[in-house]
Length: 361
Ligand code: F0G
Image (cartoon, rainbow, N blue to C red; front, side, top):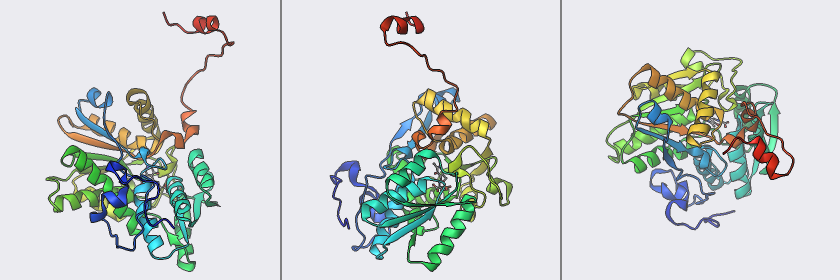
């Protein structure tokens, strides 16, 4: 059981979420200070998309740079540390893929068993590969994510396993640290925060983080929370449960978000919005992020960028500071990347053939 930081060098931004934000987290002296190096992710200024839409101060928060390639690690490190503190031997989650990858990694690191309930066929290939590699027991539920989460809750009521979905309050506590980092980097909160919404834990966590810093006078203002669901999986936008959610962005293929009420509160309290974007808009933003910004994100993350483009077309955002949360890495979902138009030039192994094929003078 790692009770110290065996692999981290304890220095600078390499400390992990528990060390860096210990004062803001529900830690005790008995909480193991574990870390896989999560948090302290880059905030990168937009090279092309921002200038193209007149937003000079547009930043991307690269949560894809976390150890398992998504924002989930911030909350998972707290949830797993607290599970360890409470003597748990196993963790369980329902997931569209990223939560399961993160739970599996931290469980492996801490010597716990991990059980992951995935909607059958609903997790992208890279995420499933991660769960398998980290040694989790995968349970393919023949239903939706919402079915998997309901069953995960019922299962943990009856068995001695710790539920590490974002209904676990420690997950939200850990995830709120991303809002702290944005303020720490910019010197204050941005005007607008653009974020994809699935089970709605992340928008809940960011809003909690922004409020906490403002209440502690570590920032002077609050951002408008701009959440985006995929059009085929937009229960909050529609105001009703979606029984059979559909979208290319499998991470947010969710019809009955667990933190629905909290997301609505974040939207309303911040004078923000929760809107939807179509799969076409998501794919357009996905390609632009890779080809104009050099940021290969997963489709769910591109929903936030698609939302920004939609919002910027509808009203004037010039002069404002905007942050888009890039929640997960593009490599998680290679099958979607392979659907982009591309062609390979096939050549024999000689320079003349390559020179003939490539129109470079
Ligand atoms: N982006 C990515 C890459 C995600 O994996 C998720 C959620 C979201 C956005 C939405 O965040 O649920 O807090 O509103 N993934 C969960 C999972 C559902 O199981 O990995 P949310």
